[in-house]
Length: 114
Length: 113
Image (tube, rainbow over all chains, first blue to last red; front, top):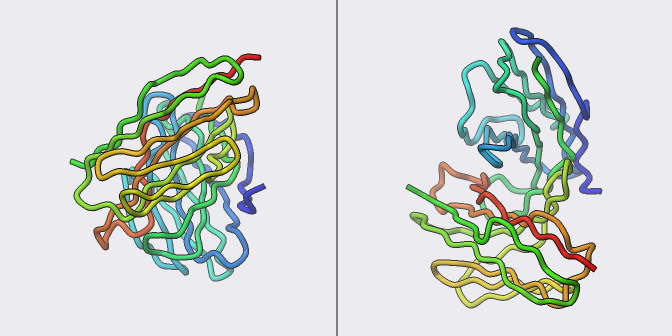
């Protein structure tokens, strides 16, 4: 158990809908990262928050957004869902915001868009 | 463009048959190289971080090494429970990269009894 909690574990929704994925980081970790894993793209970095502020952005679509709350939990919002958004979404957390600290991953949310 | 390439894509080993996985990288500046293990449908599990060429780290049957262009993950006398996908990732030196990891595609290892 990494100490990172993601909910829900599974999500099935229709195209065009909006969903929210939730992540609670390890106790004491200030950084939260979101990654998307699909069969053809592998693990892709989406976005990072550090102590409530956005710190780095990767290949995140405009239909996706995220935030980190004062209690450090984070939410990833996915809207206008398309079939291609079906993937595993992972949250990871680390102590530091910049380099050198290991990131620990949650068990992921499997999103299926039908 | 920064790139991380892992080889082979898949590896089938007999129990006890040692082997090595390769992770080669072309990046503008390396802050650290990470190895993770991932079981099907689960999140990546942290194994090692390497920061400088010549560094080595060990954990049970696994040993990771780093050079200026690549890293190796050596699996010594593997057991069936070592079956997993092994991922390598790089963390870049540029300040706008912060802690994000750029992953390779992984090597799927199957160890048969």
